[in-house]
Amino acid sequence: MKDLFLIELKQHNLSYQQHFKEQLFSYMRLLRLSVGILICDKLYIYVLDYNDHEMSLEIAFTKENENGGKFIELFEKGGFDEKKVREFIERNALFETHVREIRKDIQTLPIVELLKRHYVEQYSEEEIETAMNGLNVRISLNAPSANQTVPAPKPAPSDPPHPYGDYYEEPEEDYILIKTSDVRVLSCGGSIYEATRYAWAAKFERVRQYHYVFGVIRGIVKGVYIVDKWYLVNDGVDAGRVAFHGHDAPEEFASRFLGKRIPPQYMRKGSANPLLYKRK
Image 1 (cartoon, rainbow, N blue to C red):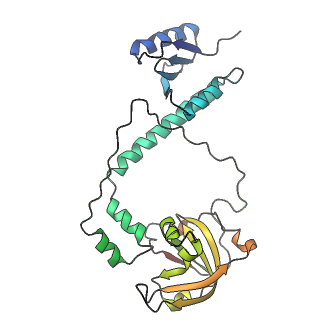
Image 2 (image 1 turned 90 degrees about the vertical axis):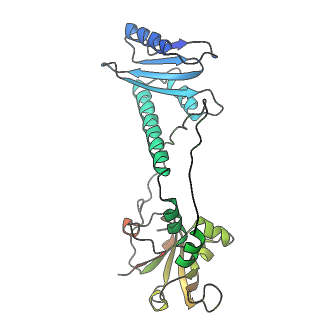
Image 3 (image 1 turned 135 degrees about the horizontal axis):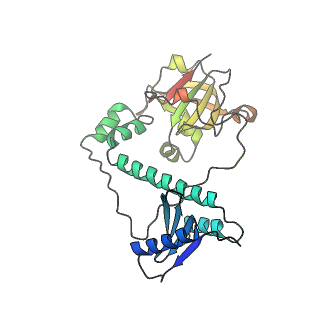
């Protein structure tokens, strides 16, 4: 019978101490085992390579901890695989590194400029500048609690790829991409169509040449419409802007684009205009 891994079990109320790990490693080297588990106030998984290089992961005893569920899966009887344990620890280490990098970046982001870019799809520059005038935006990160752990990274979806790929395939037809937002959709009673069709700062003579409109949120096509009529708004705060009346495109056409990402050329830096045009 072959030993697979070693478990060092301490009282559950004992906090981690360095000599606990050293004792575990001593037994692992003696038995020539690469994987060891230390259990005390938390669960600690260690993997040693031939050069004594250490990989580790700690799992708190918290309710519905996803890493805890994965631990049971990896170490259940008949299911142990050292390679999978290594991959699990490496994936979590990379995930935590990325989380730290994002949190560090967030604290130095030009938040006001990002907010302006977000609202440029809904309001005029004058409206945005007036709203932002004197605004002071700060982001602070709360220190994690002693038992808080970074959630396990979600596995990649296993659904089969769409026949058109992640990005939709450009059609022969001319169309306009109109970038809207979840906030705008909510303000339109949950209607993507209403959030897409009304009302935009654009040249009427240009938009009237297009019969297809794609409603886009965060780079994903959420609606595909056929334009029945373009018109200029004549009154109110949107006077002079363009809008359209239309209807959903036929399913055989719309299904090629709905839920797909818009091609990379429409996501380039500087493509802040909410209306993007595709011509043959």
